[in-house]
Length: 251
Image 1 (spheres, rainbow, N blue to C red):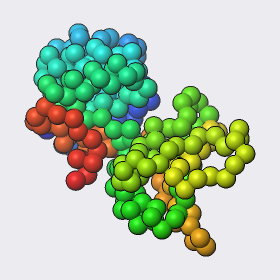
Image 2: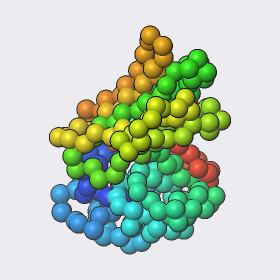
Image 3: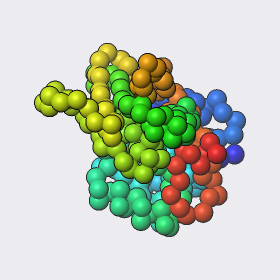
Image 4: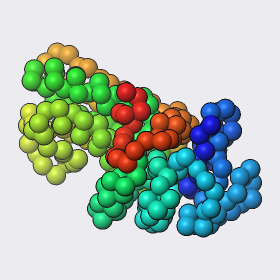
């Protein structure tokens, strides 16, 4: 049995993961951390991770950037592996994540979906074949109207996957409205759509002469991210210090 602490347990993802774990016989939440204790969780909830005295095999984090520093300190001090899902970290915090990973196991991913992480692998192979053949590359991401950042971290991760495979030969273009000129063959266009309750749609388009190849991923609920985080927690149990990502989980 894998014992986890849910950091950010009363948020939407925290509650989603709580529900998923309740139905999973291989893992259990032994404690939660959230500034808001609504009293509806079947496990003890602490206002701050530093106050948590419950032994665990891993922490799953879906909180806010301001809480990540304390989380990393706790994980290093207590030697508890961390599945770090909070986004919007500063450069200083990213450096702290890297430093923490030298002392404890940390898994960080721009997107916890198993499908997206499989797509990251597939795009490398596609780019290696299609980019040299002259295919233009465009990424379109769509999210709900409450999302404040654009483009999404997942869209950037998809672009990075391609660019890494192509020796970083591409530049990213986010807005074509201010420049009236044709695209170059060494750019990846990234467009963002915000509306309604779209959980997360990503299309990666390889457009060549007389043919188009499109890779698409659709998330229909936040549960896909929760399932990935749970798999990651199971994977991290007993792992040595190091920086891991979802590619390690899916093999």
